[in-house]
Structure formats: structure tokens, C-alpha cells
Length: 167
Image 1: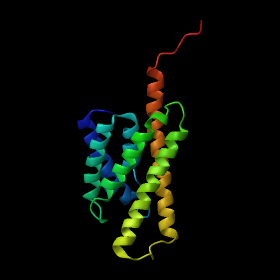
Image 2: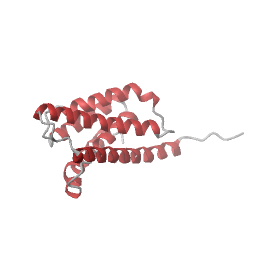
Image 3: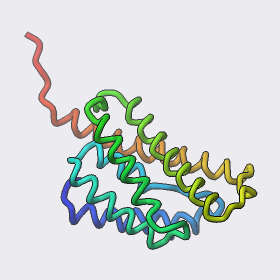
Image 4: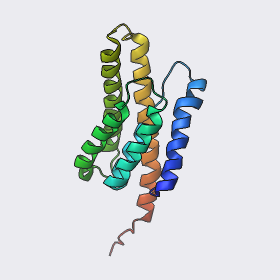
């Protein structure tokens, strides 16, 4: 990761998986793959590269969304800003800060979507067991996908770092 044109292809591939392929396979559950990928890139890459990816990802999701325009620009912008502030505390040796970051970012996206949908429709009847199970499945899928990204990248980074020899 890190080359902008390849990351744009990743955005298109992940967005098509998220909005077309996975919903046809799992029609009752929503899966968010783009948020953990963006969180990973915000942490692993530079700030400007992460924000460019967030803008492009927001445009890709906004084109398929029925929620008010700009929701993903706001959520990914806020997530990116917070991650840039706490980035120095996230280590490749420990998965706990990564898992917390993935879960909190997905919680923020779900909360923001829920608030915007509630304000837009004025109808709180969609808050039922099905909605809760869908949000829980979304958080779980984000957690698993994010940790898979972390595990693959951390194993590559740990293999590349030179080991100190014991004298």
C-alpha cells in the first residue's frame, strides 16, 4: 500500500464488494470493509495520503448512499483527524490499540448514520432488534477485517526489521 493509483483501485474494489457483491450474498446484513481499510491507511501512511483516500472513499460511498450528502465526508474526516492526533500511541507490536481503533471508528460511522437518518426521517421505528443485530454484525465484520489487515502488515513489518543479536 502507499501508491495512490493502486489505493484508488483498492477503493473501487472494496466499494464494489461492499455495495454490490456482499449485499447479494448476505442480504440481511450490512458489511463495512472501507472503514477499517481507511483506518489502517490513516495509521500506516502519512496524513495527507490518508485524507486523500478518505475524500475519494467518501465520494465512492456517497454515490451509492441514500443518506444525506456529505455524511461520509464528515465521518471519515473526523475519524482521520482523531487518528492523526493519537497515531503516535498505536504500536505494531500490540493489537489492542488497533482493535479499539477499528471498533470505535465503526461505532462512530454507525452512530453518525443513525443520527442523520433519524433527523432526516423523524422516525425512530427503525430502532428494533434487526437494526441492532445489523449494527453488531457490521462492527464484528469491521473488527475481523481490520485485524486481518493489521496481522498481515505487522508480520511484514516485523520480518523486515533487523533483529539485534545477543552478545
